[in-house]
Length: 350
Image 1: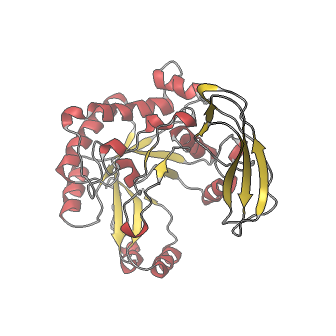
Image 2: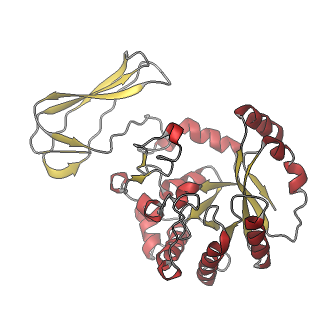
Image 3: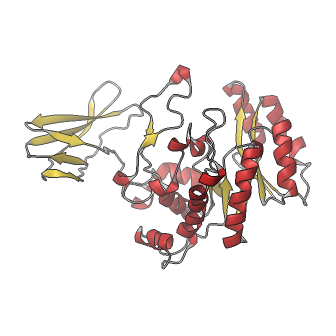
């Protein structure tokens, strides 16, 4: 994307290897003028492969020019979609044959505060119009702060639904329930302020499944997919906990089940598989006949090695159990041993 009042600037596009040797070069001469943003692209072929290569832009000529949304994509994206996903990475994912893909996560759903929470409606449509926000992991860790780490949403909800459909997986979107990360600001939308959050959930179901005559079904069709995505389930909150979560979950559940009674909802049991927080949620959610209970584990390698003894205690009469987040709190060596022994990528029990 660019804008310039008068022509006169040429962009020289270069790929350089780790030693700054040029391994690919092209050029682009912006040819339109005015105050509006314009889009233009160029292509060139790299002569080598270097995992530490970098992309540089040199300016030649005279003039003033503003640039934005600069992207470098391979020519052979997944299904050859413009500005699409890396074909090799999608193929690796497809080869795993996942039953579902949980997206976008994670703490990124919550945000450090509600202003920076993930909002699906801001991730569809032209990429250049998707609202940039600070990434959740921008300054989270003092030892590896990344203050320039932002989200541009090149992979948004439409691309996510396409991906799940492409590889034969169910989509499992996770939506904010009106609560920011409880380890950060712990900001909470009051119950009187919750309607927009609930409406986002209802609108997402309509976007995925609605007829093309509906507002959001029409939007999906306009983006190139008139056929419904057949979304079956959704997570309300990421790993939220406490009475505040239960209050908000009840409001979401009532509204969604009233309109879509067969739609399945994933409920959070917090960040631990034991303790007071877990016991409150686990007891309440089971008594409410939750469709799914989502447990998140942050434990030692030894704890994970004992996982089979934990999972076999689940009964057929229990709500479905979803393990959506595991993190080993020891060295990478222990984590590799655990992963090799358990062979766990995602765990879904019926």
